[in-house]
Image (tube, rainbow, N blue to C red; front, side, top):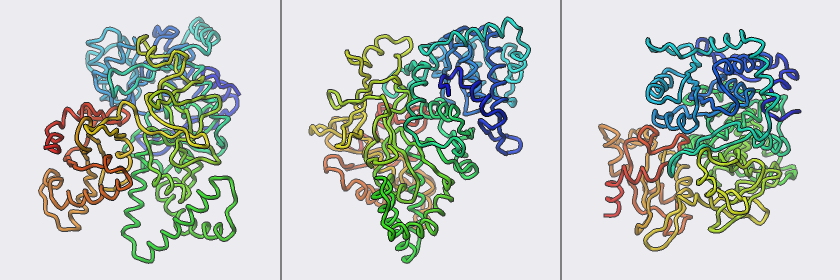
Length: 602
């Protein structure tokens, strides 16, 4: 089977024909509609021809500013046929972020997914001469009265379908001339520590990543179903979805992230990429249900979890068969307890669930495996075409992020920095030779900016993001992500920013889970008029303090949070506290909440 992205569509269309390549939910009927491989191939061909007519040249950029839609994939592969470059922009990006990426990538064409995206695109087009063509994905987008240049998706398809013989010949010659060194995508970093950088990923990078995952993963193309949940602008979801459709795994494209719980229960995916926060919320919801059970039910569940831990983590994890008595008990508890939990979540058909992007605590990882949810923890970056390491099927170590993919190398460099080499490592940063040079050692190892160590069995253990690491005024180093991940397990805590650089002790700005707080207040007859009142209530603060003390008791005294502030409003991308990948911007938080922070050290 060909792995090359610019060849794969034709190969799989011949192989699968009328079989579905992906599904999307029709807005009018709210039903999942399928698209066959033959139709996908036709649409890719027509859009690729239309791009040539619109003046797209090889190695020029096509930007996509949209929520997840089938059009995103068609656009990507149509660009690849022209040897052009796909530039995904997060659907939550601001006008200034879109403007920057359009300028930096020199994208003449911008595809938009919604009315909001179109409105921003028009503002950018008025001020930025680089942008010459807007394409609208959704038929619901209303064009401005004076807009005579924007083209709709249906018109784009018709334009390509009516292409001349010379146009068809030109696109075919471009596809024939494509080489692995061609740039496939520019994935822009979130800019947590500065200006976003366009990560140059070539076709060779993606070819290598796909081949490595083919060798590593125990997947089943005939029966596996993937739910596309994370943004396709995120390298994790993009690389995974490319792998899935290359292998013929059917993909359900979730267009509205707010409806993910509903989508999971409808689709019941066997595979789904996710970030730890999703599983943290699953864990807290299940724990809350357990806390409300009677004594006998609780005892049954705790016994079930103990047996699940023994069977799945002591034996199955190591490829060993459990003793008959343990296996019999596990099957009983699986039918009476675990299967019902998995079905309530929507993962009752689960095969494995790749999870990366931030630390996931040992408690949650062990809990999920104990109830039969096969979480595959991994580690990677945009600069490494996603995966560097992940759990192997047998012998994975909880508390690590797994072992390297075939042909990927990593080592621990100065300052415990994780260094990576391999065919999946980026070519560099677009238009940024200085930053590119700084990203590599003299002998060609990529500097990840993450610190780690290697376990006795060769698995990678992440310790902290080097740029997040800070030192108290007492000279003690603090890794804030470890604390933030631990506190994220609590049902009353939604977001955490740990503070303490050059301070006497560690503090935290905490965004509570407001609905859970309201339930607690109601149950304990706590009076309040607003969220502002609620987060300042002494009984609420004492309750959160008690829970924090319990959660951090295994941390060293100097690492523990001594004071905290509850905020009445969540961190958001709009106010700059979060990146598009939902990572906190510590510098912004320190700036916006300087008064609250100083008060904790008064």
